[in-house]
Image (cartoon, rainbow, N blue to C red):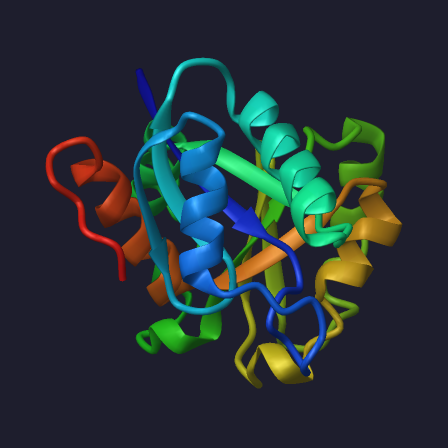
Length: 188
């Protein structure tokens, strides 16, 4: 059994795609996943399962569509992938204020030619910085995420994959939850 973190894109934002966290926990538990715990209202769920993160994400997407009638993209990572990202954040020294750090999680590894084309734009985006690390994009947004051009839609257009972003505090909390999953982690 592995530990996974699934992140739903664009739920409970602006009154659309409403999914209550108890319903999400029940839905994920109903798929046969264990030790299910959610964090905040934006669709973050930690659980144990056999299989792969991609298969778990697809199963959750399909169940949400069938049970709730919503088409919501889901991106998943293993606990190890998330813990490695927290430990190796290439922009950790960019700012002492962690509220300016974010991670955009991609649904699939991006084409390296597209990543190179994106990297060539560095410096044309004001003070905002990013670094693609595997299937993740680590962001430093000194003006705040709400003011950056480096949002989900930007990366989806440029890289051709689904994206969902979490602030650094949420990423660290999810990594901590994933590190204790299966050992009595409690739902938030």
